[in-house]
Image (cartoon, rainbow, N blue to C red; front, side):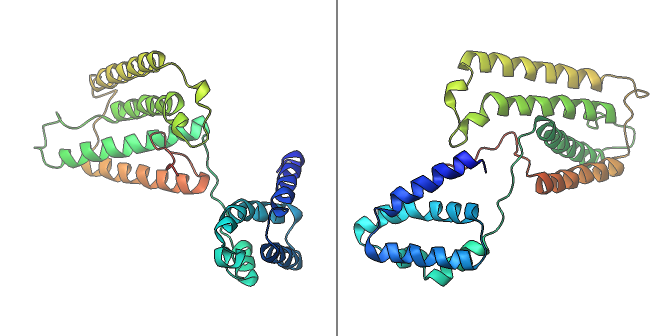
Length: 234
């Protein structure tokens, strides 16, 4: 964390500590000693106290103590030391596009492959060629990302809604790219078999499953935010 930000939090902690009752003040004093003995850094200590002090100051107005809110000093120390590492979240454009691509390819390919298993061998009306699937997934991934860029990112808690594009611009942009997606997908589906080969349905199902599995791994590995998902509101 930047030193200036850390100093701001430390000053905020000091102001909040001045508002504590004697009992709660003693609790925080003992906790600081325990954190120091546990070899936590100054930054970790400041952040841990900053998570506690605002609610403690507020709750003590109704007579609650730090021990009632956070348990004993030992219990709180244990919770701080063994706190799970926060999952990093990525909104990198390329990763979000890749996440969308794999999702669309997996779902479209799975549906196409499964349906292909239930039609006669010479019928291909419900089975998309591999080129059409790749193109549709690639362009669709861009469309989904633009939905996040113009709409969903501003639904996140703490988002700066002043930067949100005007509604008419958002609608115009999304309708345009969706239309392009539709035209590109259908255009690719009309390509001759030599340019748009139709895979065996079982092969397509396997490839789709691998795409979805890879997406799951990458989301866990990089914490990729889904383009169409917004964080839950508190």
